[in-house]
Image 1: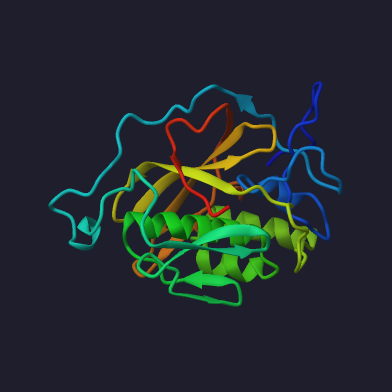
Image 2: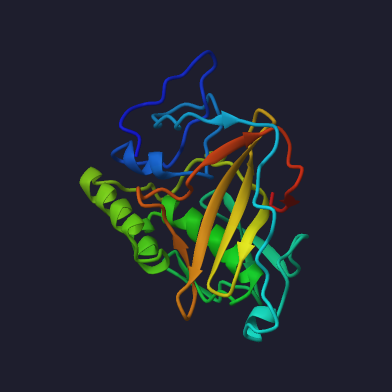
Length: 247
């Protein structure tokens, strides 16, 4: 976890945005939901960002083999926008829903019932990552939908220590919207996916997120420091990503 604000040079950097009663910890943990640069309000600075012109990815994607279960073979890793997706605005952000991929239900802001497929993993990752950071009920979402690891324990420790809470009604335009995705790897037990979000300056942010199959559903996996992604990048264009979003 950063121990202090990032040093800024020249123009102000984009800032994390999770509106909080006690500002700091939760905003510093947030990766792909960003506030537009220059907007008002108290926000924690993002950590230093490495500006690159392209995203470096592993050379191969781990695909199911014929020896794996029939469930794993139901579909391939998507290289185009998945079919059958509808979008709902939740706390000002468009989130994906699918009759086949999930979630099959959302109770008190807690999504569940995602298909054991690549598209199910993708929808689960977007749904859970957003909700566990911005829902008013985010602690319950984290407890239910985030894998029980040291990362989750650290996230909850920081939340408790800071007496943090989210507002029920964020202002329109507070959060940036999902713009695309790219699978890094997929197996029947876990998936690593890069999410792309569009920034107001015309560039894009890339975050690398993970979900794991717990035997009944997908769960988000946090880093040991409680954050979502081990790194983030700012890229000039969405080349190499599947463009995908609800607005």
